[in-house]
Image 1: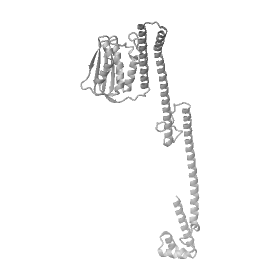
Image 2: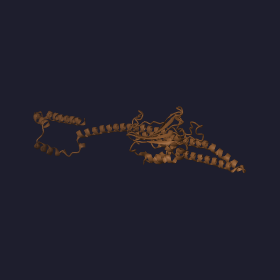
Image 3: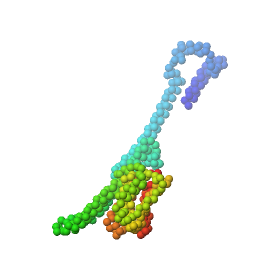
Image 4: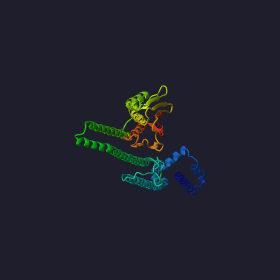
Length: 395
């Protein structure tokens, strides 16, 4: 310690003074020793002060004139300069090492960003947020470098997700266009042929001409329904439709659906049985789109029902869910075909419905899923088919 050194110097100075004085006047040993070992009196201090003043020695003397302090201070300053220099060099080394690691970190980030630009999105940079550390980057656990690594990882993930979504949308659009082209090909061919017959056969009887016109009308209506349904399906799948949340009165909804299908019901003499719970709660969903979905399902049930049979429509509600059952007694569906019943353009039996396109049930499922519902089907061939639509109360 520097203070111990100073104390040692003072003691040595006192010892030297005592030795020098007593070697000349040994009889003053007691007095001299008392001066060194005991605190002098005020009187003695003033006397000594006045005595030394004659030799320009006072309490205000510059430390450079004090050999003892001068040597001590010079040594102290020299030691401090050495210590500060060593400390400065150590700091410079640490800073250099730290900046080198920072440089390496940013070099890695730069390389990773270049990989992202080149289309490589499978990156995982070291950062403390993801719990992914790299010992070669000791500072990557904290601060802005860690945040930067995390953000680059997030950027890579989001770009990858966006590109995958765009690819899915591209494939979906491609499939939709292909489906529309394929489905329109047959009715367009029929229309062209019938139009040529009507144009070239000027002597065709009126009844035959009217029959051709009726068939042309049917084909045009079929094409219109197909295009409209596919556009609805595409909008739902592309999530461009915002479904509303509104209170839907189940009985009013079913009544409206049955009125729109009244002609088909009367044509096959189908009896509709509606079974509901007391005090039916409202459904919370989009009324117009739910009606669209249920019309397709009820219409499908009517078309596959035997004549003079019935269709049961049941509503069930509890604390967990609300459920709609639509059950017909007719053709039924083979077990092997049930997994594909909601596939787009899937026609289970062309003999029963030769003009069927196979888009109705697919559209219904897309709508029901879009309004946070689920649909599945139970069926027994040549006996019955039951469509079950479920809405969770948490929705």
